[in-house]
Length: 529
Ligand SMILES: NC(=O)C1=CN([C@@H]2O[C@H](COP(=O)(O)OP(=O)(O)OC[C@H]3O[C@@H](n4cnc5c(N)ncnc54)[C@H](O)[C@@H]3O)[C@@H](O)[C@H]2O)C=CC1
Ligand SMILES: O=C(O)C(=O)COP(=O)(O)O
Image 1 (tube, protein in one colour):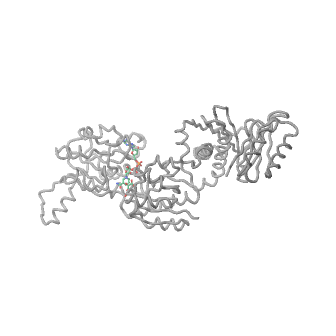
Image 2: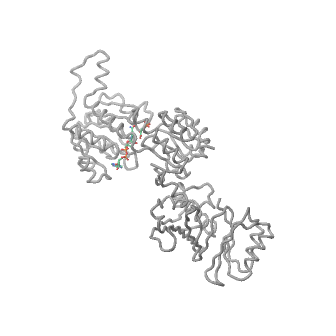
């Protein structure tokens, strides 16, 4: 069955075209995102959901999304998506971080000019037939100080344009390096300095716990008298009530807002002030940007749904389409080693170390570790996948460490899992041969060589003559056919292990018979499907 994607916001038709070209079924319901009940009723049929800012992807919606694998945001901000809830359900959340940066920056500049020359009010007055030439007295932008709060993709585009307009640009962004600031030609400053010096303040940070109300009443009070504020980033960055007060007092000369604490904004404390300019979240609304973000998100979602490639995910490391086929057998290996450890463990795993040796260290080890954790937890949490696994492990108190080192043995690449439980340690190593098939090559200190089969028996026993005959006899009595048999031991007459692939399931009574065979220490049935 081909994957199915729902587009629940108004995206360029380019997105649906790409999905269809890539063999994905797509339904376009551009207004569905605004109706949470209808969306919840429909979401269960889809593997992918493509959205903009109108669709709210809540924990409740995700609970109804039994097939959902990916949410694709055609744009930047994912604050309308409950990312932790998506992660916990194993759903990838991806965005298009650059597609609308220039367009959003141009809107910020447009709003700055609209404020400086009161263009919206002058337009309304002129078209009302008033010709109020003496009412409108603007300010020049040239030579003024532009304070950019958040100098990322959009902020730096705004900074470059500000410099082009012959403004002095200062920026507050704790993550902006001095070198990047120099390259951009901006002066990196602290927030208080920016507030005190800027004639125009423009906000370009995401909305986070740190940036919420970054322009609080207290910080608005620190601004230079007569400053003008542009918010084209996110509502919630500014205390709107406090700003209204500062506008009413005349301390702030003007404010231009594209985004609001509550959207759609049909009412807002800023509305109605003569020096306020508002647009309805139009920052990304140009045909160029919409075409770009729609194409990008459809490509990214298709790559994930059809090839397992991950780009621009906010909750998983990226895996390029070129890396995906190379990584796939190692992800499978890591997951199966995890499944082995999870099924053999007789008590909860407290700590998991994943050791990578050799060529595999050059690949995305975080993705493989996530797969190993999902395998480890699958015997107790059936639905888990690699996206959710690291968070779930953390919640369950399983400490995870990742170690990479040079190849130390005969294998070009080796992955070893050490799972520590109250009952001892399970150590298992595996590799992928040139046939692309993952296999187990060591359990504890004992070498074996076994491919993974859907149904297996793992035995540890004393290495004694006649044991294998008795074991095979027990399987024969239960009419269980042996497909492959891999043996290993530490020394003659010492400890032995066997990994036996069987056709079908081992009946419980046959397992208990095997457990009672002389010399058997542990017998476990394993599933690797
Ligand atoms: N109005 C609209 O339609 C649009 C709005 N946006 C919004 O614009 C904002 C910026 O987007 P991008 O530039 O693409 O994001 P970005 O991630 O490239 O840049 C954000 C910058 O904010 C900085 N930052 C983070 N925490 C900070 C803090 N506490 N103080 C100061 N700086 C901080 C980061 O270091 C980063 O440089 C986002 O909120 C995004 O959702 C984006 C596109 C269109
Ligand atoms: O990309 C963003 O962060 C935006 O805010 C754009 O929002 P929109 O896609 O126009 O609803």
